[in-house]
Structure formats: structure tokens, C-alpha cells
Length: 176
Image (tube, rainbow, N blue to C red; front, top):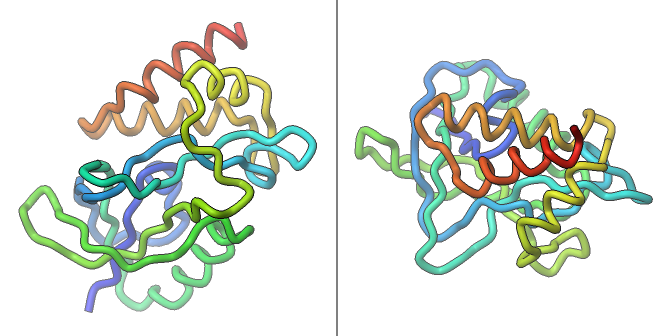
């Protein structure tokens, strides 16, 4: 049985595991947003950055990529994803139904935000998000780089996100 992983942020451009197949896809009931304070990868405890997470929202839809893990790499992929995504307990690992662009529905490992976690920060304005992202740096590099890579990759695969595009332009202005 194929192991699928749903990518909506950095997994789009840096999956970190061997991908056998990649399909654009959609997840119902969740919205992609910068609703998680990053104190490890794209910020620090002293100066948190922001990373994308899936926030459960009735009627929302999030587009992304469904990535099929190369056969024989499932266990090491899951272990690597857990090390990367569950560095704090802000993300929750779920197996969710994802609709591929082909119309097929698959179950995919998906990381969603725990809205009760202290790193959750849903509902902040785009301008405030831009101000935070512009000045944060973490263990995996500058927060703006994460934003730029994600926005660019979404556009490249035909899934441009208007909020991310606005944020990318605004952060470029702030860091110029």
C-alpha cells in the first residue's frame, strides 16, 4: 500500500524523503496560514518566526501536493517526518483524506496545528505576519527564505496562494 504525505509548506520544495509520485491535491476543512510561532526552524524562543500550519476551518480548502513515498522507504520517511515536524508538540500528525487532481481520494500523513498549543497564533493580520517573518532566523535559516520558497513553489505548480504572494512582496519591501 502506498504511503502518501500531504505537503502544503516546506514539504512542497524540501520533502526530505524519496518521492515516487507527486500530484497536486486538495484537503477539505483546513486552511493554510502562518498560524504557528516557530521557535526552532525559522525563529528562536527569544524572537519567534512564523511557519505555515493547517488550521481546521469549516468550509476551507487547502491546495498542495500529495507525495507518494518510494516503496521500501516508508518507515524511515515517517521517522524523519516525525523528527522534523514534531520537534515541539504544536503539530499533530493525522491521516486525512486528500483528493488528488485526478479525482482519486487517498489517505495521507498530514501535519495540522494544535489550536490549544502555546505556539498557535491564528488570526493575526497579514501585516503583522510580514513584520514577524521579516526579522526572524532559526536553525533552518531565515524566515523570509521559507516564505519565498513556499510561495514560489506554489506558483510554479499552478497553486499560487494570494496571501503568501502578498506576504512575499511585503517582506521583500521590509527587508530591502
